[in-house]
Amino acid sequence: MPILTKQLVQKANKCKNWQLLRLSLKGMSTSERLSILKSYLINVQEDPCCTLTEKWVQVYNYLNKLARQGTIEPVTSKDLEDDKVVVLK
Image 1 (tube, rainbow, N blue to C red):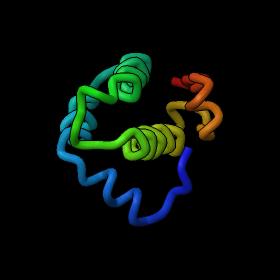
Image 2 (image 1 turned 60 degrees about the horizontal axis):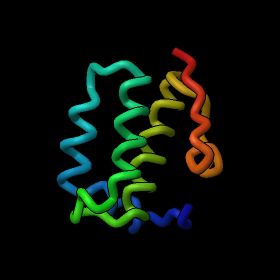
Image 3 (image 1 turned 90 degrees about the vertical axis):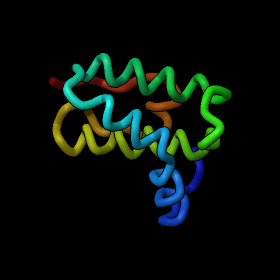
Image 4 (image 1 turned 120 degrees about the vertical axis):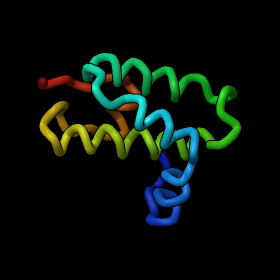
């Protein structure tokens, strides 16, 4: 996981493809969201808009938003690497 800087987060979140994906997750179950986010990270070549680092930042921020909402347990970069995200709701 890269060191998060304000500039990196802002650049990653400006990606139009990420914004479209993020909006498409609304209304889905947490399990469905996690599955789609995992696929998004794995399929790097399918999105020339974002680097792998930017994708990690996007997904990490999204998962931490879910944690703040109480949907999943708080996520560390190690959890993300090891595919150990715990769903609460």
